[in-house]
Amino acid sequence: MLIGFVWLSLTKAGVPLDFSFLKDFSKRLGDGFWLTVALSLASLACSLLIGVACAAGQSAKILPLRYLCNIYVGLIRGTPLIMQIYLFFYIVGTAWGIENRFAAGVIILSVFEGAYITEIIRGSLLSIEAAQIEAAKAVGFTGRQTVRYVVLPQMVARTLPALTGQFASIIKDSSLLSIIAVTELTQTIREISATNFRLFECYFTLGVLYLCLTLPISFVSKWLERRYDYGN
Amino acid sequence: MEIEFRSLSKQFEDHKDVLLPMDFAGDVHALAVIGPSGGGKSTLLRILGGLIAPTAGQVWIGGEKVCYEGAAVEAHRKKIGYVFQLGGLFKHMSAIDNIVTPLIRVHGFSKEQARARADELLGRFGLLTEANKKPAALSGGQQQRVAIARAISAKPKLLLLDEPTSALDPEYTTEVLGIIRELKEERLDFVIVTHEMGFARHACEKVLFLAEGQLLEYGDSDTIFQQPATYKLRSFLGKLLEWNI
Ligand SMILES: Nc1ncnc2c1ncn2[C@@H]1O[C@H](COP(=O)(O)OP(=O)(O)O)[C@@H](O)[C@H]1O
Ligand SMILES: [Mg+2]
Image (cartoon, rainbow over all chains, first blue to last red; front, side):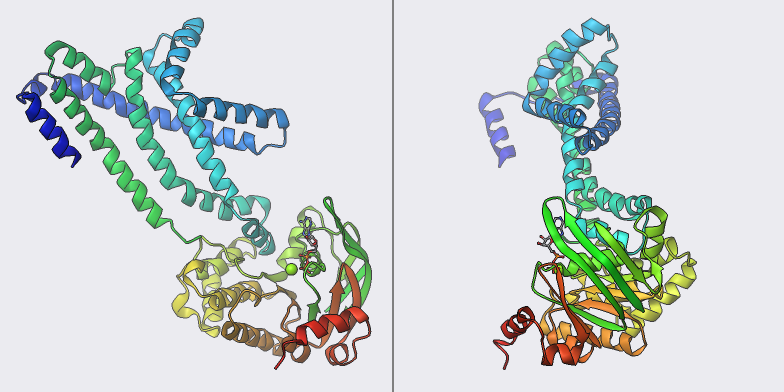
């Protein structure tokens, strides 16, 4: 239906479609595409580290550490990404002389997504029942064995589908880095459309390219969900 | 198995006097612990099994003093089999892995030995076809049979069961209690917390009555049921029998 509506709008606007320019820009599009992939993968890795550390901090016995982690999650989740990008890049980035836009992009995105991943991990940690831990003790597992054979496998089963979903979000969110001129996919398209004014074709292509990344991921996420569903 | 408590007591930070100081000594083969909810039955069983430490006092099992610290308590837990109400099986493992993993990791079995032992027990409890199912795919009765198989797999010196049938439908209750009675015939010593008074009376030799953290009565099961000495036990049994046919 949505496609039909877009199509109707198109014919109403009377814009002839012409995708021939894509060939000329294929190299730049490819570069942008792979930069988006690289940005997202790097951010996924860093945000996972942040998420794990912060979730551990939230359940730590040291109160100030706990508060610090809670404040971080609250601030990041309570503000839009675009504001964080400007703030980090133009103020923090300038102050500390972070010139490399790719690195800046990864840092900003990781800090942002890390807060969401913290919540995912904390949720799965909370969902592990006391009865399972007690059973682990009762069969004679040591503390370390309990983590290895009970806590970790159950956490992985519960976090993996959600984490995969979050990866799709990272890919989409990375498009906002175009505002600090990281030439990832969105920025590449912006530049191209600024020269040839084929707005519709450009952004249509952009959508298709993002879907090429996110659709398989959400498919994997669904599959993982079924694979690890042991009933709760 | 000789079990002895010496001025054993337990208090929680937010809930004082869950177990009042108690002394007890008895030769336990099939002991039922009965009493009203919140009376401290599970707490007592957890202390026996080394899952929590008492606030004061000592526990002696088979002439050995139970130590509640570090490696010693882990060694103690290895010698005890434990069955919980329901949900004590590891949810992410199949029935057979629930048995095999502790055998390998805790008791040093080889993979083949562990599998053979698990197959033997699953076969005996009529669960061979369910071996690869996760607990959620099993009925409550099947889950409890797997839990019992796991608990006895390493030949524990004492089996502890905390209301193993409370969450089950009546027909499953009978089948699980039947298994426990079989174990008794094989001279596996056990302590069971139960609300199945028929089982406590006819399948257990001794009964211990616990209410409001106090060990009020202990004796032969027939005596306990026929001549309850305390008012609390009389009223507890009276309430249970109110709807008897
Ligand atoms: N970990 C705990 N922390 C605080 N209070 C507890 C804890 N475990 C049990 N209690 C309290 O101890 C009392 C006895 O509990 P329990 O041993 O489970 O009784 P029963 O098994 O006889 O029903 C209850 O009032 C319960 O609320
Ligand atoms: Mg209880």
